[in-house]
Length: 265
Length: 265
Image (cartoon, rainbow over the protein chains, first blue to last red):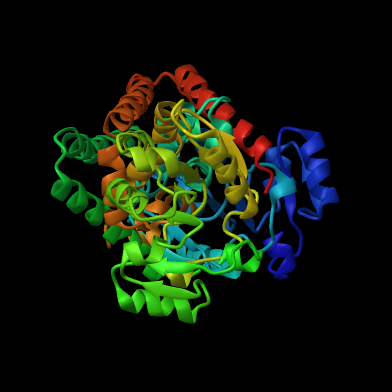
């Protein structure tokens, strides 16, 4: 939708497993044509963007790299990067064509009915090139994601995964754990704090289970640090240590205030 | 502001410790008159509403009950109820005049500059009467909070505190712990999930520290259940158990979907 709205692509072909979803995407104007055959779709493509759950991206990239034209750019939108980059770089054709990407945009809703042409505007897109990434392809990947409205930054794949375990993956797991405590009897009493704290728990398990599994150790590390912070809170609360509670609160609050300062509404 | 906008009060007197804040409230049209003297303010009041941090409400209620007219209604807006009700009921005058209330409305922002006349519209207000609460005063409290636009419900104080430990107090502590993991280096990579998960970490420690301390055991219990849910997530992730991760996710997700169903945007 963003490509078409911005005139950045001549023709957008949608590839998926479910013909009904592809029909819906076509009727909503998200794509010009559709197919369930990956090879057919990428045979004449200039750019191929993989948006499947992260555990499927690896195999799809390798498969498409064997079929796509020699000068095609392959990129993705997965929330984890290290395992995808590793798999792509183990394949000579994928290594020559693929630039891993993570546009920081989206919501807990899935399906083309929730698609928006302005989704990427002013959002960060992280590219995770390595020493093996062809510079020409990297330049084109920068241009492609910029053409959707993204602000492009670069990180190495491992740093990306460690950072996003903290800024995104852990908050998703925490949202689900918080939601699990508020059953039907309590739902009528839940308001703003619960609503915002658990919003992303409405997302699809089929999308998030692979993210956790692909980014296992960084998520476990983030979870341990988070549990450490909660243990400090617990200890201060249990002993009634008001000064410690205030200091603990204000440390987290400072980070949140810094975020607000960088992200004016 | 809501009382004045709805014509529900002839005159609103603001009481506080800081004359500058009271001046600001008057100039913003939140109050008709102001004083730093609680006794002076309540001497001729029909209704007195306590909006101080929860650890201050107890003493203020008892003090005001000794000065307010015999037929005055005293009520509050505190996020915890059991300790406030206990303190009020230990004082004969407070017991005769006070009906504890918790309007489920507000935000992480404090100060009259963020006040809104429509804050209470269609929001739940929980009253926590006991066998000692005079029925006539309870009826008037229902009428008072309804006149601001609230939907009034009733719970006993202990149940209130246990429920709100889960729907509100724990989510606030969790927001702070999540924010503590995202320092200045990571802030530029944080987006929607972090923004919503940590919004309430921007609130004031002076407001939240007393809430945790007044509701200590229910918050500790909620924290233990939350930690149990995260431990299940951790164990499934560590062992790479995809089915267990999906089942865990979907259990939390169901509660969130139920919340969405009851709270159409």
